[in-house]
Image 1 (cartoon, rainbow, N blue to C red):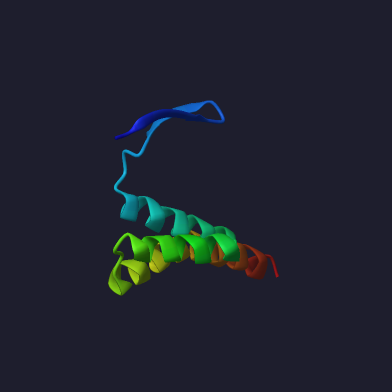
Image 2: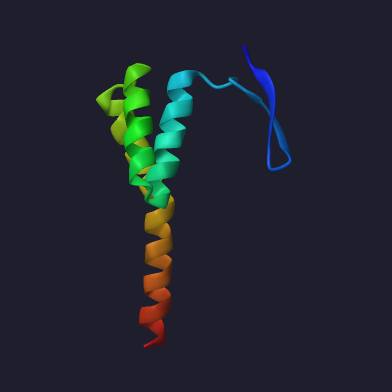
Length: 82
């Protein structure tokens, strides 16, 4: 059952997401910010919640997309400036 929660002034219902989905999101966020301990913890928790290897790899790609786009944009900017 979802419960009322607040984080930095944002009110939400904790527990609304299915546990597997929540863990996959946390896994992706930790990958994107480079937090290895968080990656390991949430990967393990996602697997405990039944995440398949296919779901995990899809999540990895989703985590890579914004980071890859940022690297591409910065490299183009710097390289075009000469």
